[in-house]
Length: 404
Ligand SMILES: [Zn+2]
Image (cartoon, rainbow, N blue to C red; front, side, top):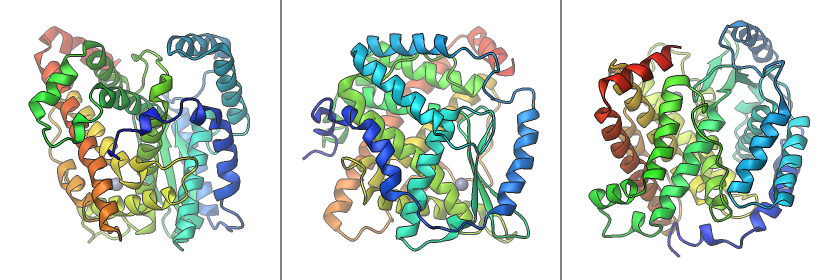
């Protein structure tokens, strides 16, 4: 079977029908049972850090005068446009409310939906660590940073071996939108991206021939590069035939991002001055790949090759690189080569060194990473060309937006 084909055409409705079942039972099956945490210092430090962040003027907390009915109308309209029935939409809405009601509260005032997602992803990662007999997650506290931008971080608690794993309020939005646009791009030419007669020029033509798709990608990156949020992107839920790949890609990106930070904590990064921060990035990536693969050894419903192959990490890293590139064009401030982070190509090269016992499986998984790299690099080249070609006035306007 082709690495990409098939999945998108999985029996319609099945995944959808089982979404609630998935989310609810996933925790029961893989939930971390009986693990005694030693994270009091981390919890206390997070309380202090969060209080400071939440006091900032631009803290991304849920407004006190937030009106959920307005959101609900937008939600219904979006799902109707994507071809979902009223019953299906109601089902999703009820599920969402249920998830929000049961969400943990690590960071009072942030979106309960973000808390819910983060809790689920961390639980999956920690369960995978447990199966691998890695116990460092017992010394980790979790938190949501009330800040814009697609962030994830590990903060060491000095004098202890505890750490705080955090994500920004908009990381999951970013991953969700990239996953949606990625799925649409993949479906432009499902078999082409991994075919032997792939060419970069042909790939660019495929993307450029769909102005709506290009506009969607551009809005995502312009919105995040100027505001750190999705505010400029229209709400367009996945269509039925896109749902499986969309959810797989988003989950794979999110698991990779968070597991990478667990890796920094587990490997004691940032605690010794003599350490090379660039090498630390490579080893945190390797940790994230190992965890992604292990999470996937207990698939929730159907196999997610974006997760087991590390393609989610490929998509995330290249998306962040594109975001930086576009920000550079708009702000005209070139980001100097980082002293702490190796460039993305160097990091992706290391993905191939991940040890997989079965060579056949390695080839299949690698095909996913190659196709994902091709898609993201094509999008990057088309978008950077477009942004560079914008008139100076447009750049000025975007700069003003980013400074507002
Ligand atoms: Zn890192």
